[in-house]
Structures are given as C-alpha cells and as structure tokens.
Amino acid sequence: MKKTFFLIFILLLLVSSVFSCTVSEESDDGEEISGNTVTLNVYNWGEYISDGFDGSMDTNAAFEEYFNENLAKKYGFYVKVNYTTYATNEEMYQKIKSGAGSYDIVVPSDYMIQQMIQNDLLLPFDATTLSNFSNVNEKFKDSPYYDPDNMYSVPYTYGMMGVIYNSALVDEEDASEKSWGLLWNEKYSKKILQFNNLRDAFGSAMYYLGLDINSTDLSVWHTALDKLSEQKELVQGYVNDEIFNKMTTASAAVAPYFAGDFLTMAYQNEDLSFYYPKEGTNYFVDAMCIPRSSRNPEVAKEYINFMLSEEPAVANALYVGYASPNDLVVQNEDYIAGISELHEDAMDILYGQTPDEVNASYPYNPCYQSLDTLSMNDSVNTLWESLKTENSTELWVHVSCGVIVVGVLSLAIYNTAIRKWRSKDYRRRDREIAKAKKAK
Image (cartoon, rainbow, N blue to C red; front, side):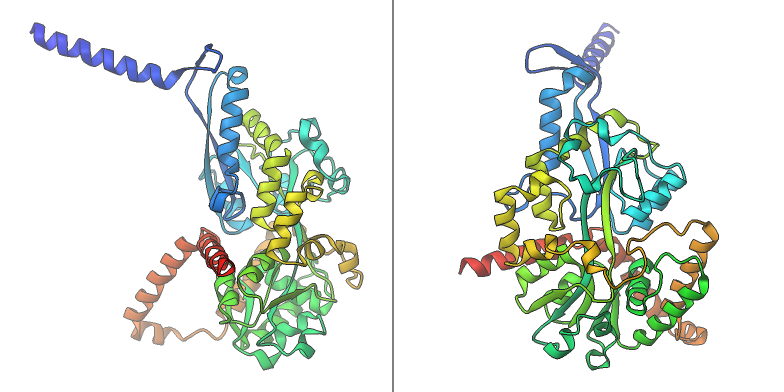
C-alpha cells in the first residue's frame, strides 16, 4: 500500500512539474512570466509571406522572436504563430462566417474586406494608432473605398491584373494590340487559360466589353456570360495555381494573371511577356485585418505593426512579388536589386504606371466591390456555375461510366486538397530550377 502511495506521489510531482513548465517561464532578465504560450492563428493566401525559403527571412518566426524577447513581459505570455492558408477570398469568407475556424489575422482583398465589414465580421482597431502605420504610403490612407477611415485594415500588397503570353507561341502582332481580345483569339485555341474564380473570369470579359464590373443589373452579367461562353471552346482549362506550371512549361500560351506572379513565372521562362490591357483592368489591394472572433486582438495588432517594419516588409514584398504600399520597401536598395533580379523591368511593371493611367479608357471603377445583396451574389454565382456546367455530359452517360466518374472525383478531391497550398510547390520548384540554371 505504501508503495502505491509513493508511486502516486511521484506521479503527482511529475504532473505538477510538466504543468509548471507549460504555464511559467522566465524572461531574459530573469523575471518569471506566468501563463501558457498563446497561439496566434494567421490565415493567409498560400505563398504569400516570406517563409525562410532559399535564405529569405522567416517573418512569422521573426515575429515570435521579437514578441518573446520584447513583449512577453508586457503581456505575461509568449507567442507561437500558427499559419494556415486559403486559395480564394470566398473560401476564407465562408470559413470566417461559419465560425468553422478561429483566426486572429486574415488578409482579404479589398472587395471582400468591404463585404466582411458589412457583415460585421471584422474587428475595428484603428490602424492609425499603430506606430509603424506611418510607413504606409499616403495614397493608401483615408482613401480606400473599402475602409475609408483605416479602422479595419492595413494594406499588405497591391497590384493589377494583366495578360501573360509566351512570345515563342504568340505572334507579336497579336500581342501588340495589348487587348483582352488575345484571350478570345481562335488562333490559340486550347492554349488559352482562364481564371477559375467568378470575379476575375467575369472581370476579364467585362473590362474587354467596357461593362461595369460592379453592376447590380443582372443583364450586364448575362452579357459577360455570353462572352465567356464564346471563349469556353477555346479554353484549355479554368485555373488558379496551375497557371505557374502551365505557363512556365509552355503547355499554355496565354493567360490572365497578376503582375507580381508574372515576375515569378518569367524568372523561370524568359519567353514569357506581360501587358496591362488597353481596355482597363482590375486594381486590387490585399490588407491585414482582425476578425471579430479573434481571441487575441491585441497580439494581432502587434503582429500587423511588426509586418509594417522595414526588414519583414522588405522580405515579404520580395517573396510575394506584388507591389508594396510600404514606402520603406519601395525605397530600399536591397528590395530594388532583389525584385529586379526576377525581371529587369520589374520596378516599371509594378510601379511604372498608376492604376488611373492603366484604366484611362475604362469608364467605371476598376476595383471590385461587394455586390451588396445576398440575392445578387447568389445570382452571379448561379451564372458562373452555369458557365462551368454548360454542355456537360448527359446523366445517362455518367451512370454508364460510374467507375470512371468515381475515379475522376477522387482525383478532383486530391487536386483540391493539394491546390490549397496555392502554387507553393510550383513556385518553390521553379525557383530552385531557375537558380540552378543561372548558376551554370
């Protein structure tokens, strides 16, 4: 019996020791800090933050180190960043709205920020109170339509959409038009890619036709749908992340995508070229926000403030490739040299033309905005689904080919899971290959 009590006593001591290790640590100056290590949940686009690859700065790890060395005493706990990713604004929105996940930081695009504010999903925190907010360029302060008072967001990246083409596969005469029409050119049938998300896909048709991308008149969207239906027979595939592989390996010749991503692709394949369409194009801002459901809003503010400081901001801008709204980045010599290594015209592509200049011929606001009503969003979603499913195989064919369908669905599920990494494997592999080539 005494032996049993002794074993129980030892076990209690061990449990107590383990528990004390999880709730009490010492700061660098020897002062004890009580409390569990707090997890900061960051939900961002894949491949959208510097992660230490190829000697780059791991900015999440750098924040942990900064916080734990400088702020742990103030807050009474240490911090660990849990970083997860999404593939589209809509995927992130549904996750936040449903409450399926608890996050402290999200990085939506402008129109989605507007929609999340309207639906009371974001926490107001007044970005102007952050000490590093002064690093943000003035044109991003007190002017964004989606957050005019900077109460809910801090700009992270910005840029414009354009057309990427392979100069070895596309006639220069066709490309010299600098038009969205290249995506409808029958000469490149089955060599054309289109976005696999409704706002950007519809956007390409609406800019081309001079239609209002934010129209609440459903007939306008039907006109764009007709144009996309014309294009469908020419399209090799509706893609997002897969564009990196398809364009760098020349399995496709033309695609709409973003300027920052073009720089990464062109680094791998020097035949790739880019232009902003003359009819006008999307101008976007992605910004750091705090969901209303955040469990650690004060730490989230520290995270945002840290990412606005020069070293992590430069590292993130170099890694992502999109234009930076941070003045310290644009003026940084290492950034200018690094981004120019991706492409000799990188600074001109990213910063050479303002959105107003690029969209001089487009008569409407080139920025996506929330479509206001649930019914309008549902109607547009229905149009998008009708485009994707039109001319689909009849039901009896599916039934007779049941085994094949199961196989295809299994593959689709697998591909969807993989795609959530949003081109991370493609881009990392491409950088490694390109680096090896340049080293020869």
